[in-house]
Image (cartoon, rainbow over all chains, first blue to last red; front, side, top):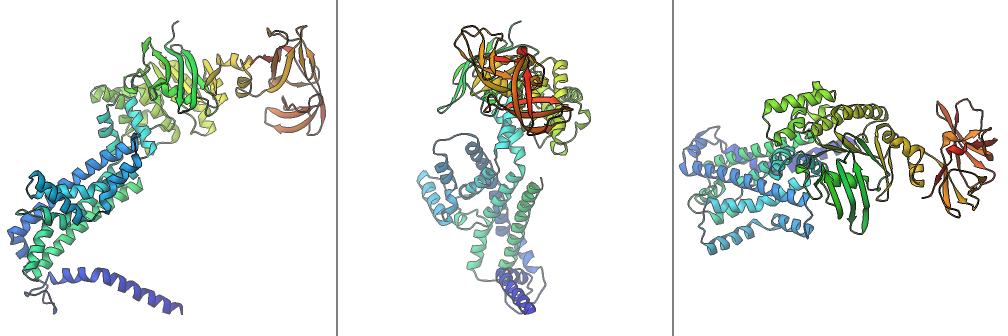
Amino acid sequence: MRGGMRAITIVYAVLVYGFIFLPVVTLVLFSFQATSFPIPPFSGPSLRWYQTVLADQRLTSALGNSLLVAVISSALATFLGFLAAWGFARFVLPASALLRGLITLPLTVSYLIIGMGLLVLFNRIGMPKSLTAAGIGHVVINLPLCFAILYSQMGEHQANIERAARDLGAREWQVLALVTAPMLWPALFASFFLSMTFSWDEFVISFLLTRFDTTLPVEIWNLLRSGLNPKTNAVGALVFLISIVFVLLFEIALFRKSKS
Amino acid sequence: MTALVQVKNVSQLFGSMCALDHVSLDIAPESYTVLLGPSGSGKTTLLSILGGFLAPSEGQVLIKGEDCTSMPPAKRPTTTVFQDYALFPHMTVGNNVGFGLRMRGLARPERDRRARGVLALVGLAEAFDKKPHQLSGGQRQRVALARALVVEPSVLLLDEPLGALDLKLRRQMQDELKAIQKRVGTAFVHVTHDQEEAMALADHCVVMNNGRIEDEGPAERVYSRPGSRFSATFMGESTIFPGRVTPSREIETPFGNWRLNTDATAGTDVALALRPEHVAIGDRPLALGRAKVGDVVFQGSFKRVTAAPERAAQIDLLARLPADAVVRSGDVVEFACDPRHVLVLTR
């Protein structure tokens, strides 16, 4: 009886994980296909399609654009989130709870709405579609996240440590740069890498707000319009690999924090 | 000798709560001042006002004759040792101690040299390269002290600095604090609720209660001649009982009419306080009468005894008897005291 239950449990687990990972595994597997169609039978392994991807100037420049937008927008979102969290944690503000709610609100709004809203706004003020516009969109979606992570890490004990720094003659910017930020390094890193992960594979906002220079997810979508081939699998596998790196860095930042 | 710090008529309101009620206090240079009181007495509020972390609702704070009432902490000639030490967790001990000097623009070699000097003073020379989390509570305490002392403040403020340490370490640190204070000559202002700590450290002991100063002066004087009922019970224990001054200048007490030294006018109600070590069994001039012994607690060098006097059973008579005294719970014994030991308190 017990053995039967155990078998059912295992089968169930296999099904669940299969459901989650089978598409990814298939995608990665057929990226190594030697022939021209990403369908069985598997004819690889071959690095042919990876070579094609890396030789495709549009894809590599889109990859570069994606990284650039991810790094800059994440750094900005982390910086602004840090200042906002510090402000809410250290000062008594009027309607503090309401304002905190408003700052985290974009988390609940769909990316489509945010993207369209920014599109209308940028049109109105005459700002052209560009990587900068997409980057601003990514700051909008990631700032609430960074704020929430950093705000949760700012406690009363740290406020006392900041007080000690001020008591010893530190100016306000020195308190922030030499005491507050270094105490929060793990949370700052975690916010940054999580933002990177989200910015890296964000599609809707980038699609709406970029035109000629665009990010990798948008370029992949362009590629898909001309039909399936193992090249899309290869570029998808690359995107997945880089996402994993960001998530790992995020986990390491969190893990180091929980150790100390 | 002019005062180093003058607190003039300072009040602090938190909403409708009055944390400090028109407090005035002078602090002499090179002195060790202890603010003693129960929680909520306003002692920590007063320390925060001295440190510049709070601007008082009313009144003035002068340090070295200069009005510092609303000057931020960074600009004041004061530094604070926080109760939770508030060390910078990401910096080495050396950098923690050197932080204040760095803020004053000193170059690293000079900073390190002076940080090492102060660390040696507090007995932690070997910890220079360690991180705070590698140190014990007592060692962190010393780092916090070194960090506050290295910038050579005129006044060092200590907020329950020994509160987090175990009793043995506390007594040891307290002796060291006193020695360090004498050595550097900086005025220390130390907040505590521990009256033994206060007596051991204070040149000037300030007893606080309900936002007011109840009593202040040398610790010995505050103990032997407390100014109020509160300080007689908070600074050490006392048996308190009521009395009334008669027209013949005697004091009417539950134990009979006593002739005591007081300038209270006839007809005033007073409180009489008796320290437990001044209550004895047997032959003393003032009889307290027979009393039924309640608890007898053996404490090593003495026995702590409570007793209910037959003449006034509602009074809890506290006595500190010699360790070899033969008393047991339930015994009925004659207690007595000496008139010079009875404290007459008019407030």
